[in-house]
Length: 155
Image 1 (cartoon, rainbow, N blue to C red):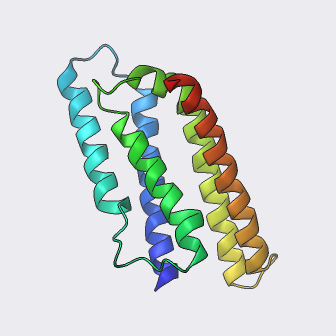
Image 2: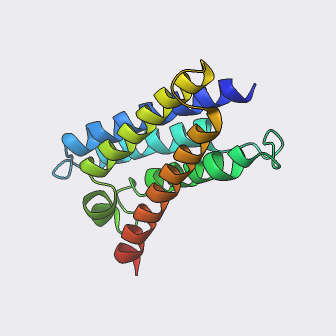
């Protein structure tokens, strides 16, 4: 069911963001390359396993696919690839594009939107349509903000 898949993606995203926060807080910049490569490998494998969409399993006519699944998948995979120590702009990515503050903002937004959907599905406080519009605006804002910051770093 689509709602079960959405819950699975939400949980997976929260776990990914917590792992990235751990790395951001306990900066391993002075460590040897082995630990950095281990973290990067773990994050990349985690993203491929949890977020790489299966083209046959997606409902391409569903708006959720285009508004939530595709941007989340691309964003998390791009971030995971930037964790590889020899990836171009690795350090500037983690300092200027997706630093600890940005990770916390994304995590906060994901959690309050998940809670808002919980209220909407139980028919409390907000309608499901309003919830989708709020979540869409939030995802677009995050994508725009990260896109602008990434553009500054890469170009």
